[in-house]
Amino acid sequence: MTTLSSIITPTNLVTLTGAATLTNKTIDAASNTLTGVATLTGTQTLTNKTIDAASNTLTGVATLTGTQTLTNKTINAASNTLTGVATLTGTQTLTNKTLTGYTETVFALTGTTPALSVANGTIQTWTLSGNSTPTDSLTTGQSLLLQITPGAFTITWPSVSFTKVGGGGAAPTLFAAGNTSIILFKIGSTLFGSTLGDV
Image (cartoon, rainbow, N blue to C red):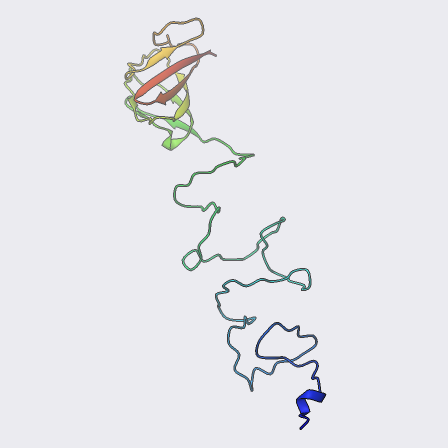
């Protein structure tokens, strides 16, 4: 007996198995239940899916390559795992990154016993209001540039290993008629200082 399937080869049919290409087809979602299909609305999780940008026109989609501008977009870090992304909060380590156009913070110390700390800025000024004794609040790897306007007053430094061009380990004599600039930096538990000069 000859069966119908042996003489008819159906074409343009979507099968339940295998891979098929749908061209100019409409799937009526009102009369069919579709599972595992990404829709244009709502929230969904795509796992092991490939979007072929070569054969589709995608708009409003951020890609992994190229340069794009994201406007009014929200990345929900609570439901996504983001790697290689710098956030606005928290502490992160940037590796092989180039920072351009950044500005250091300039901070004015006050009082006679201020803490030497980069928390307020890495460039600091200090107009003495009396004989002063600052405290060391730097940690290893931190440094700050301090410009001092001493007037007639002096500074009793915390434990600082001062260096200068040509040698010498004494604290600098402050320039009473102007400013003295000093770089302070911490290596391990030792605070170092280097006098830049007077102006």
